[in-house]
Structures are given as C-alpha cells and as structure tokens.
Amino acid sequence: MIMKKVTLLLSMVFVASATLMQAQQTEKELKQEIKDKAIKEARKEAKSMKKDGWSVSQGSLPLEKILENAWMKQYMEDEKGNPMYITADGNGVAQTKSVAEMQAIELAKLQLAGLIQSNITSIVEANIGNAQLAPDDAASVTEVVQASKNIIATELGYVNPFFKIFREVNKNMECQVRLFYDVTQSLEIAKKVVKKELKEKLEMHQETIDKIIGIDK
Image: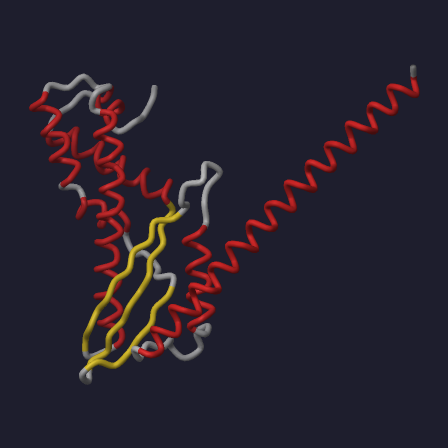
C-alpha cells in the first residue's frame, strides 16, 4: 500500500513537472516567435526609413534596434490576449530639432488621446443600457464622452517618446515620434475624466455614472 502511494505521488510529481516544462517551453517559443516577427518588421521598416532620409540622434541606439524594441512592445499582450499598450505616432516640422520634436509629441499625444477616447466611448455605449437612461440622456452622455479628447490629452501630461527620429526637409528639421501608453492606465485616466465631466455637465448621480463607465459597486 505504501509503495502504491509513493508510486502515485511520484507519478503526479512527474506529470506536474512535465506540464510545467511544456508550459515554459511554449512560452519561450512564443517569445522567440514574437522576437523573430519584431526583427523582421524592424529591418523592413528601417530600410524604408533610411531610404527616406530618416536617422537617429547621435548616441542613440541604431535605428534597427529601436524599431525592433518598438515592434516587440506592440506585440505584447495581457493574459486575455489583448494588446498591453496603445500606440500613437506624431510628426513635426520646424527650423530646429527641439521645436519639431515638441510638435511631434503634441500631435502624437492628441492621437493617443483620441484612441483612448474611442476606447472609453465603446465602454460607455455598451453600458448605457444598464444605466436605463432615457434616449435624450443617453445622447447627452455620448456627446460628453466624445468631447473628452482634449481633456484626456491634458490629463496624460508629458508622455516620453519611445523613440525619436529626424531628417532634414527643405532646410527644416522633421521629427517623428512613437508613443506607447499602458491600456489599463489609460482607461483609468479616461474614466476619471468622463466621471468628472458627467457629474459637472449633466449633474448625474454617482451610481448612474458608475454604471455608465463600468464601475461595479
């Protein structure tokens, strides 16, 4: 009887170990597959960009490596298989690098805010039914949410570009930046903005607002 129990225990340990090794191998293979995709996309993109005159600042990582890291970030997913980051690009043209960079960041941030606003709009539209709003009230809520883009952009503050590249165009400097922002964090900011706007502009009760933006009590 003791031998049977020991054999069964050893079998369970072996199965568990084999399952863990298989899971680790699968995860390792997945990471390698993502890296291979990122390298392939980065080389293709870098080749096209260099042909168009783009380059990195002195002391920066090579363009290929920067793009590879960016593609890796774009491929990152959470446990549910959803993208972990929102991505936005921006361009600016000015007489100096610094001004062109500032313009590019602001444009990218507005694009980022637009994507975040689009995400929160989808959430709100899906939850409006749960709040049992009258048609006119539902329309007002949608209008407030769709007008929240600039406020969200302000709440984001300064977003550090993942990369910056430059080229000379007609004696001016052109800058292109790419921004990444955590999806979960971005939705928290959007919910905070929409919550405040609905309370101030439509004077809604807190319970109704929570239902609209998907906060369960």
